[in-house]
Length: 314
Ligand code: ADP
Ligand code: MG
Image (cartoon, rainbow, N blue to C red; front, top):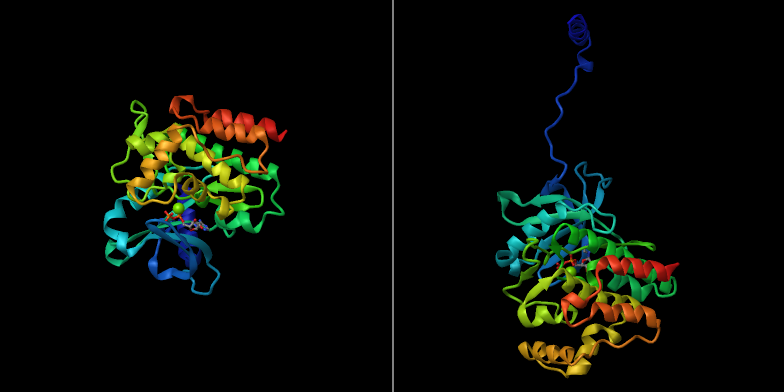
C-alpha cells in the first residue's frame, strides 16, 4: 500500500507520467475515412479487390492493404457470402492462406468490406505467364505442395474451398504462394462429408469434379479434383491457349449454359481428361490423373499428394 501511495504522490507531482487510458480500439476495425483507394487489383464473379492505403495519419505512411467488396449489382444477394468469407478467413492461420486483417463498414453499416494483406505479385494466373524464365519445374512443384498444405489445413477444419484455381492462388514472393478467395468456401459437418450447392449459375465448371456437375455435391475429394486442374494450370504457366476451359471446349465443342455442363459430364464419364502438357513429366501427370478419378473415393488425398510431390522434389 505504501508503494501505491508513493506512486500516487509521484503522479500528483509529475502529471505527465500519469498512465493514459488505453484507447479502446479494435485493430481489426478499419475506418472508411482513412482508407485511400490506389487501384484495382482484380475482380471475379461477385467481388472486386482494390489496393488501398490505410492512412489514419494522412501522410502516406500508412500500410497497403487489399480490400475486397461486392460489385454493386451483387450487393444484395451475395452479402451473406462475403460475411461468411470474412468469418471463415478470420479463423484461419496458415502460412499458405492469405492473412485476414479486418473489416471496414460503410457509414450506416450497409456494405461491408474485407481487409486482407496485400500481395504485390498478384495471383498465379497473372504471375506465371510473366515469370516463366525464373520459374523452374521444381518451383512449380513446390508451389503445388504449398497449395496442398493450405488445403490440408482447410480440410482439417472441415471446410471445402469449392473454387480452387490458379486465379485464386496468390504469390507472396518467388518461393511462396497462398490460397486466397474464400468466397465459395463452405463448412461441412463431418458426418455429412459433403456440401450441396443450390444455385450454380456462376460455377467454375471446368475445375469441377463430376459429382459437383451431376449432383451438386462437394466433398473434400472434389477440392482434390480442382487441385489437379490447378496443377495442370501451373505446369502450363497459365497459358490461356492451353487453359482448362480452352481444352475442354475443344473436346466438347462450343455450346451454351446447361448444354456445356451436360457435354462436359459426358466426356468425363467416358474417361476423357485434360491431356499431359508437353513439358509435364509422366510422374507429375500421373499425380494429376489420380486427382481425376471418376469416383471421389478413388482419388488421392492432399496428404498423399504432399508426400508424393515431396519425393519428386528430392
Ligand atoms: P473474387 O471472389 O471476386 O473472385 P478474388 O478474391 O479471387 O475475388 O480476387 C480477385 C483478384 O484480385 C485475384 O485473382 C487477384 O488477382 C487479386 N487479388 C485478390 N486478393 C489479393 C491480395 N490480397 N493481394 C493482391 N492481389 C489480390
Ligand atoms: Mg476469385
